[in-house]
Amino acid sequence: MSSAHGAQPAGERLESPLTRLAPEVKVVALVAFLVAVALTPPQRPWAFAAHAAVVLTVAVVALVPLRTLATRLVFEIPVLALAATYAAFGRAPRVEVLAGLTLSRPGLVVAFGVLAKATIGVVAVSVVAASTTATELVRGLARLRVPTWFCDLVALSARQVEVLRAEAARVRLAAELRGGPGRIDTWRAVARSLGTLFVQGAARAERLATSVAVRSGGGDGPLVLAPAGGAASPVATSRQWAVASVPALLAAAALLAGVLR
Image (tube, rainbow, N blue to C red):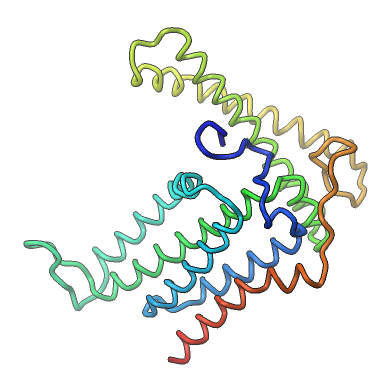
């Protein structure tokens, strides 16, 4: 993520009230919120409106730029294709939306639920990611007694994504500095470099995995991304747990209202 585009660089976080929460608190609160959203029936659009209001309020409190959230919605493209499949090939009855074009009424309901859950989930994850560094995430998972191998997997993935992002940016900059006559030529040069970048990334990931195995020596400690002397993550308190549980409780209330109604 580039700060020039309204987002923080990889490995950094936005300074906001959400950053003062312990990482394990944010992880548990996020999972609880996502579970409530996932269990909400697609026939209750007002419940999804309540979920959206909750997550957008948290995004405002976390000072996450709207442009950052909008760019993350690109991950919904596969979900959009799935929703379109539900609407186009769902069972009867069907409803005519355009001249000669009919869609499945039950399929439209399912498609709405899929898109709503995906959108709310992407925004929620983006908000937490913007206020939590990879190092803090690994520490939070370790405090939650998550298996060490999973913590190492998260740490390696975060580092690999950061390295690949930086290398991709350098490849694109080099293509532009070579004097490509147009945007299409620039992207063509970037595309030609992706194969090499992938091979280099795979080799680097293997070296990192070997480094972790040697460094840990079979111990129980997870991989630490931050250099020694870095700022410690906040420690969870009862107040933090209470505050972080509010979005999940509101989502659970909307879920129960939707189920019982």
